[in-house]
Length: 149
Image (tube, rainbow, N blue to C red; front, side):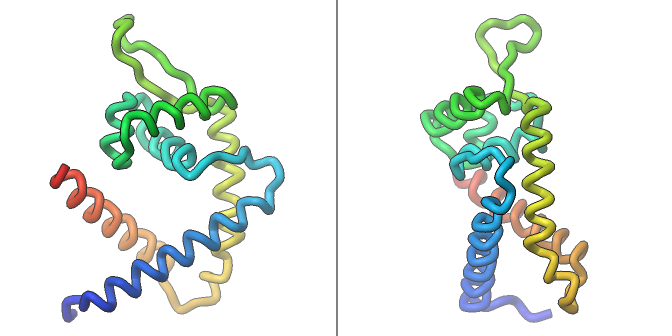
C-alpha cells in the first residue's frame, strides 16, 4: 500500500473533524444528557478509560494545562460526575474516578453516538476494522505529541 500524501492526510483530518462536529450536534437529541464543556467531556472520557488518574496524568494525557484540568474537575465534581480521593491515606496526592451518574450519562451519550452513526451500517465499511484503525491512529498521534513534550 503506498504511503499517504500530505493532502490525503489533511483530507482525512477534515473528514474526522466534520464527523466529530456532527456527532456533537446530535447530543442535544437526548434532553437527559448532562451538558458539559468540550474539556469536561474529554476529561470524563479519559477517566472512564483510566479510573484513578491524578490531575497531572489527566493533563499530560490530554495535552491540557493544569488550570484547565482543575476547572474541568471542579465542573465535573459540581454536577456529581467525579469523586476525588486520596490513595493510601496520603493527604497530598489526589486521584479521580467517575461516579455512577457519570457512567449513566456516558451510556446515554454512547446511545446517541450509535444512533448518529447508524448510517455506517449502509456503507461498504468494516466498522470494527475502521474503529481499530482510528484508535491506532489516535494512539500514534498522541504518542508523537507526548514524546515531544
